Amino acid sequence: MINAFLKDINIPRFVIAVFVMFIFIFVTDFVLHGMFLKAEYEATAAIWRPEAEMQKYFLFMLLGQMIIAKYFTFLFIKGYEGTGIMEGVRFGLLIGILFIGTYLIQFAVSPITVKILVGWCVGSLVQGILGGMLLTVVYKR
Image (cartoon, rainbow, N blue to C red; front, side, top):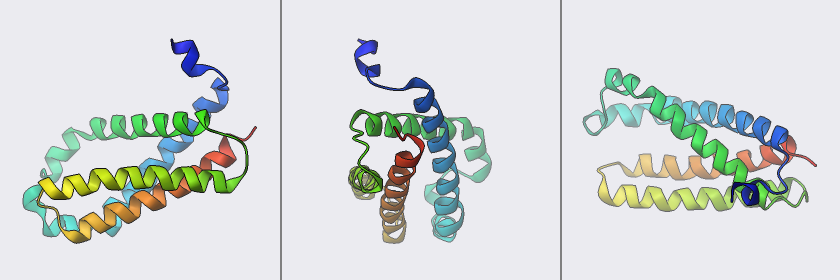
């Protein structure tokens, strides 16, 4: 069964692409959450873990980012046609929209602000599109 999933995947390029995507996600998440949305998170501090407690769970954040990087890359590669940068834009847009769905659900059940919701939605589109474009460059045939 695993062989069927790995069929037609260049494993060395896949590993490199996952690593590149992980670094990309880590950096862009920091820019989005640690810079652009920082003031909004501080204004809504009562709904988040305290900073010291978040640090205890830092490895969970890294694990989550690695899982996203791995499967973002895997899904991209499984549909990869090698048609150019617009292929990455299209893929990233679709993944970004998928994440928007999860953020809308989160907004419905959690007391996040509209600013946070919009930041997450715009951020997922930008991350998705740039990530897809990055993979077209990293995982070239």
